[in-house]
Image (cartoon, rainbow, N blue to C red; front, top):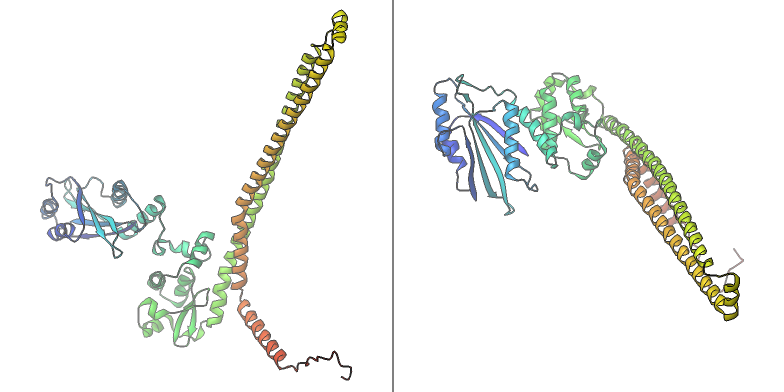
Length: 441
């Protein structure tokens, strides 16, 4: 969620603003700690209390705006307000929360919220000190994006995280897919300018954002790993003479090509680290697959042995039952004379064949299940390795393209190919003869 907050006075104007009819729906969700039951009365109470102090900005107003693609419940907005309240030290202070529903430029109805606190502590009759409120709101906003699994805007990413020497594989892939936000670039330049007072300090600050100071045709520029150049005066927002006054003459700085090579090398080094990480994870996946395969193999062997023993025991019992049908002695002689012995032996033989067929089908079914389990395990292992294999392939391609000599070599190969094609086009061609080959040449 994007959080914007500021200290302010103007209780009447703020109440009117929050109740504006331009919103499709206005819902005063909470009035906590006020005697009045409407916004105008509540904010006038805060103003009346502030008259006993020297505080002019007796209110703290916060807007809570989720991304357009997010579906958040009212409880999520309340939780965001609670986190801001705790971070800013406004716990227990009178608070109002208003929900607005308004149609965007695309015609879709979207919800956002406003939270307003009274800064005056009624017990001490002093205003709550809100030091570094913007930084604290920024941190809460980052935490809320992570908590609700929302896409974090580039401006909320810490400068340490934006450093090309510290990006993750996901950040690198996202960086390649997305267009660079001009506002984020300008913020990086302005932050670097504000925190430095010399050429060296400014150069180091820019490097933390992935830019390298260089000399351009018209003065100081910065170059990124893609070779794109940025005019320092334009992105910092100061005049070129002010840049020269602080940074001096640009003639001693590296050229654009040198800065590009250095920036590309920095990113390349990080990509190689990511490639090594992906290879380690890939090897770990392979080892896990081997362990899992051996485990499955052992379990299947136990199941096969268990089935074999069950079938052997059942065959023994069934064979004993069949042999018990054959009578001996005088009864056996009588069975032979009457043909009953032959019928019994035929029945026993048929049942034995049926038992063998049954056992064979059981063994075949177990083998089929065993094969399917092994195949499923191989597919799972392959699926687990696929992202790492693709990541390694992609990183190798990126490293090769970022190589300082890649572009030059590519240009040379292209020129050589064109020259070869031109040379082949200028070679005389032998005419074809309808009368067969000629031996006069």
